[in-house]
Length: 171
Image 1 (cartoon, rainbow, N blue to C red):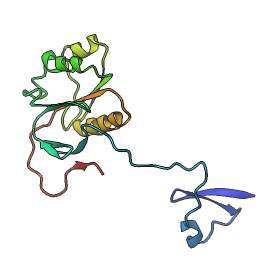
Image 2: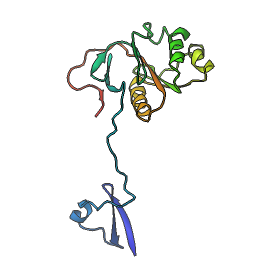
Image 3: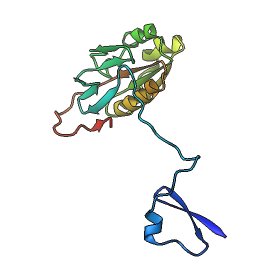
Image 4: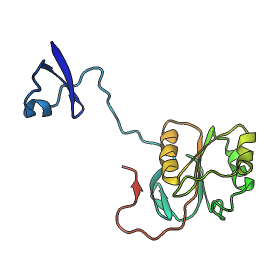
């Protein structure tokens, strides 16, 4: 009888009671028709390529302010009052962009805005997902890469200047 063992992501069949030598367990297996092949997809338009305390990068440009973002639009200086100063008028411009969903990044930590603040979006039938800003950046990139009509409303909290490698960076 054969037994399938998973080791390092490769499936190998060894006779019962035998685990194979270390060299056998490391040797890659020939691809089969059921293997998944991943290919780099290039997303057109605005893509968040990095984020850290007090900044985020869209393409090759760093922003140190809150932004509204769609694959075709970038509005800096959005919601100047930060999370505490959010109002319905901050989210009203998103209705004109007609996204399917808005990904709201609340800053370094997850925080839910008051329901009346999101009223323009809910009244227009636009979905809203709330998460911290780094997660919102990743989610926005995925949805934009799938060709979805997505918008991101991203709060960038003031933070200490960072040196070296950014906290989150697209690869």
